[in-house]
Image (cartoon, rainbow, N blue to C red):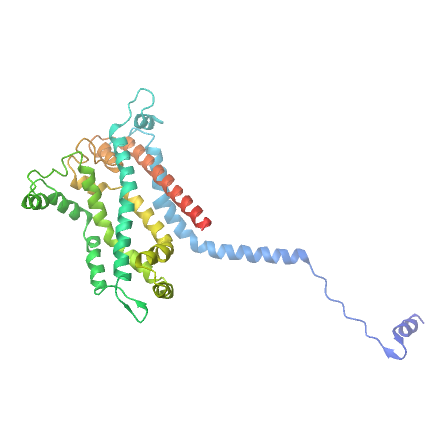
Length: 345
C-alpha cells in the first residue's frame, strides 16, 4: 500500500515525473591531496635536474668564498703547513684599529680604484656611443631611410681588434709607447716639444696614462656592443624623426639614447667591475709596479704584494674580502639607482 501511495504522489495527472539523478559527493580533502601530490611531483622532477648544478655551484663557488672568509681570520703565510686563528687582527691591521697603523698601500689602491671607477666608464661609454652613432646613423638618407657610413663593417672590425689581443701584450706595448724614449715622446720631439713628460715616471701623469690605456682598450668592444643595440631600434622611429626635420643630435638624444638605457647600464656595471680590478695593466705597465709613490697602485695589486712579496696570505685574503664587499655594495647601489630611475620613467 505504501508503494502505491508513493506512485500516486509521483504520477500526478497521468504524467510520470522522473526524479533527477544525484551527483556523487565531492571530497574536497581528496582533491586537495591530489593537488599537493602533483605539486610535489613537479618540484621533485625539476629538482632532480638541479641537484648536480647545485652541487657544482656549492663546491666551486660557495666553498672558495667560505674558505676565503675563514683564512682571512688566520695568520697563514700561504706556504706553511700550519696556521693559527687570530680573529679580526688582519682587519684591524688593514683599517688601523688598536695599535695598528692603516695600510697606506691598500688605501691608496682604494682611492685609485675609485678614480678609475668614476672616470673610465663614463669616458669609455661616451666615446663608444659617439662612434656607434657615427657608424649606424651618420650615413646618407635615401628614400627616407637612414643608412650607416660606407664601410661600417670594416670599421667595427678595426675597432674590435684590441679585444682579441691579450691584456699582457697591450700593457707591454703601451709601456714602450709611453717610455721616455718611446714612440710618443719621439713624435712630440719631432713637432717641437723639447722636454716631453715622463708619462709613467711622473706622479702627475702616471694615473692619466693608465686611464688613457684602459679607455682605449674598452672603447672598441662597447662600440660594437652599442652598434648591435642600435640595430634593434625600430627604423620607423628614426625615419619619422628625419621626416620631422629633427637633427641627428636631437634624434640621438631624444630617441636613440633613451632606448639604449638598459644597454648603457649593463656596460657601466661591467666597466665598473673592471675598474675595481685593473691589476694586469698596472702590474705590467707601471713603474714599481704601482708607482711612482703608489699613484697608480690598485687594491688587487696590494693584495698581490701582500701575498707574493710579504708572505701574508691571511692578510691578503682579508684585503680580498674587503674588495669583494666593496664590489657587492657598489653593484647593489648601481642596480637600485637604475631601477628607481626606470620606475620613474
